Image 1 (cartoon, protein in one colour):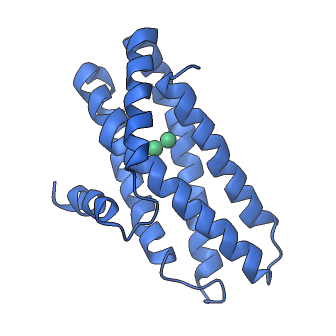
Image 2 (cartoon, protein in one colour):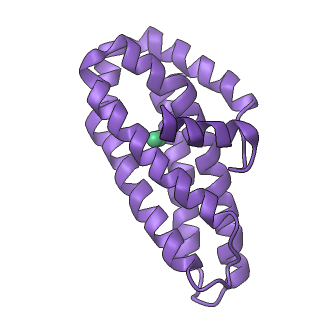
Image 3 (tube, helix red, strand yellow):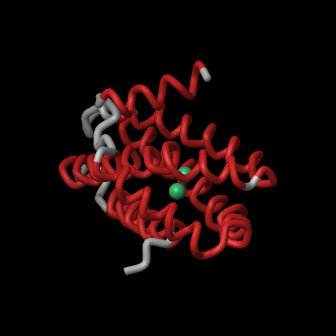
Length: 166
Ligand SMILES: [Fe+2]
Ligand SMILES: [Fe+2]
């Protein structure tokens, strides 16, 4: 099985997009399906940003100084998503701002994923090569085992706070 880091991350992007579509497909007052879709979105994003922040981004920054600006911008985009995810995790689907906040989260993350996939992951593939990407992916699979699945878990909170004070 391939452990190519970019392949693994793109597979997760597909699952994230699928959860976004599930949310959008649910009817306006379909509180249960919307709530379930948002729970799934929160879990997928919490795991995904953790793995990128803890494993992929630091390694890329260290090995490919040319991509550093892209990595820094992506950290900030994760931070915006983190804030929205934390807020959403405390809301009910019946709350007035639940749909609006989810919609803004989706717009932000769609834009972010597009930048990763179109703008800087190709530079990472070219710069790191197959072998390093395989090793990086194997490390990501390890990190996923201890990744938080809810934003209230200590390791997720620490990541959110580090982004503010670093
Ligand atoms: Fe990301
Ligand atoms: Fe990503």
